Length: 190
Image 1: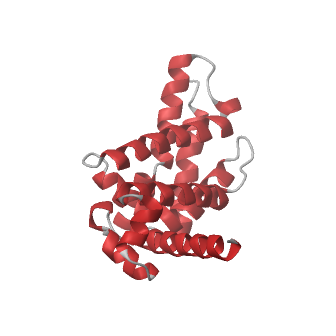
Image 2 (image 1 turned 45 degrees about the vertical axis):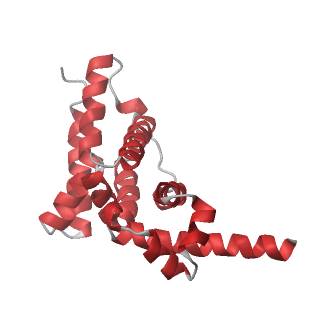
Image 3 (image 1 turned 90 degrees about the vertical axis):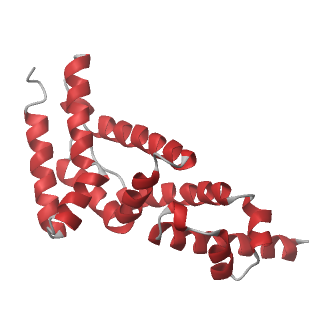
């Protein structure tokens, strides 16, 4: 019985490794269960037995990706602009291109839209936690400052700097830190 349970868990793990590769390298709409199953060395029916559907497989991948994001970000001290940017650079250099591809299809795929919405909420909460002492107390200026912090640290800004404008990782880090410091310095300005 234990050997069977281990075999089932190993099969599930192989499928998730194949799914991670697929979702990190392809757009969601181009990932097929057939290709993931083949990469994992299982039948499509075995994959479906474990995850029920492509959405189920994607949600299981997202759970793993969430833990990976937390590991890549690590712990950032309150008010630490440099640490915040370093954490995001670690995350985006590994997962940023996949995030951009997911964002590109979010409007047309409900499960991706739901995950993107949750990710936005989590990212904003993360920023609000780190910069809590630096944000204005009044609601409207606080919302504006958080929006500016979010826009600066969004994966789209990373993509613009790294992929579209071809800045190095170091240059991108310097630019993002400068932008964050400017936002925080003017956060109390109406």
